[in-house]
Length: 399
Image 1: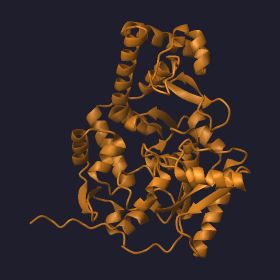
Image 2: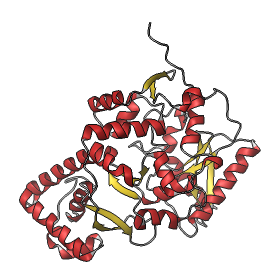
Image 3: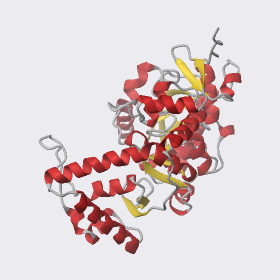
């Protein structure tokens, strides 16, 4: 007879989430690198997300401490990887992410660019290789440069292509962005310090440091283990969605981790054999672990199945059509609302259900003040235009 699978409740999962993802004051990290290690990878589609994800989980965080890790110590690496999304990953994990996910993404990006060049200009692979070599030469001479400066040094980058032809949102951009994206995806160049403030997406570019080349299957196994350790218990679908792998690769990597099956009630989950969640008492946490997490925070985007920490009724308020989430307010491992920034800089919050719990209200006020201090003169405007974001902005303008 097969052994009975351990049952893990939603309450246990949320309690473990608070610990692992540093969502309680007592669990906060003391360095940027510790935050990145705990979460495996920090979403970086919006530059501010990296900074705000760290600020929510680190004691004494400032924008300058995050900038130092990114642009001076280079202990974090910005990559186009899982699900063709830009992430920031710990330096030691970069070779694993490159081999397990980024390599495939880069190949697709290159193929798509070659197809566009052939159809619209037309140029071939040899022409693209020559342009890329010129970009590498230019950056070796310039040291660090933005896209305009690189295009001045390599005029071929000023050629234009048509995106979304015939659509209302048709555009005619230079090919510079496509070429630089491919080079970055292949790890040949990297984004450096942005122009302007730390929330700017106008990055300068520089040559990337090479890292060890790993076999893809070995890298997928390592990444699966890291994901399980940070996010477990997870379902097979969670792993497949988070990594962007196909089903065969997902199953193979999962099997190599020696993960054990657990009963999540509605689905089969997987945890590493020594996962502490297996011994966690199924009881309510007596604390009020409140966090203000940013757009696309890795905790909110860590699982495909989110019902255990988010009431499905609130999904339309928080997510856009592509499944991306806006800034969220968490308490004890569950989303209870959202937040925004007033025009004068202070943080405003919205609770889906009003609470009279003084501990929760005090913790929310404390976190709002902490985030206000971190932002200083910076004003955050999420790119995601969800209903809750629009409502908070309208309320801010009306005050």
